[in-house]
Image (tube, rainbow, N blue to C red; front, side, top):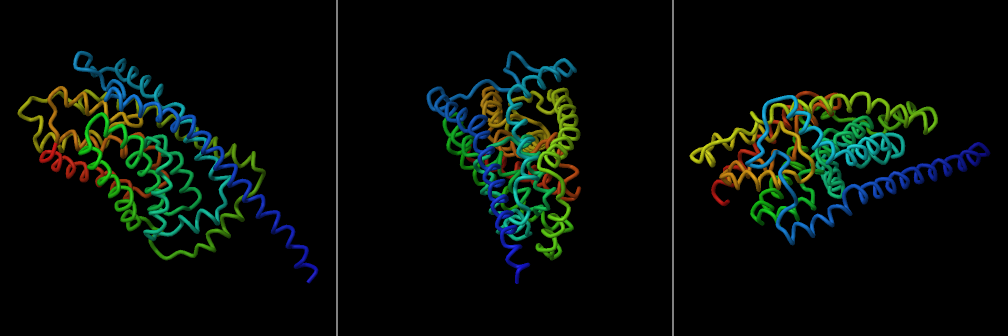
Length: 356
């Protein structure tokens, strides 16, 4: 009996510590998102509503088309990282902190199952993030290191860029409500449907004992907070940053071939829809950059079909983001996700050929 009474204060102390760490993570996340995303996007929404534009296309204008050279690659990488570096730093920070601040038992009970419920919760949790696919990737890596299920992690990762409420608002003002509706429908299918189905391609589709996973994870968590956080942060930086920079440079070098100039007869063809769907899946852009890209391409004469394909595939994933998360998911899952993005992009393009 005395031993039981002695264990109660320790249990209460651990519970308070756990709650404190979780609250600290939420405060850091909210402060970071307010500075990097929420406040800037509020101002950008006003710009979109008054000017029907959110800026120039990152791919260049009709009079300033890119060339196939390393200088062009460097110029694109510089423009891209200037736009995303704050969000990228925040993504790495949150991806490392969630591994040491968020309690394993909370995460796994909410997101550790392969059920649609876990997928739905993670997808809804992605909505306030509004990160681009590359900036959300470090958080996906962190979730997988905490043994969050494949479906839930994918829903969080894909939901950040595809059902981003700020982007939907910008889109309505700059493009049209038809683009917004297409993006919302296919974004929901991708975030909740494709993510849930991806569980079938993962080993943990077999029944698992969540309690045993929690017990194992807690027994492996040793050392001080500072040492565990530095280890988490260091491993992320060493792996993510070099792969990220090199892959963005590669995309900048080949963008002239990914998005070639096409004639008027092919501007709204099935071949163009398929080609732009594949190119959009591979290419990397900052948050909401698909809007000025589509706006500029359509001013060149691009049809509604290819534009609708880019609407889905450009923000969803990219070669750099797939490389960042490559060690966190089975290859079958990543191929399934990339293929699904292309297929949904093609379907969106076919719909766009009819209504846009």
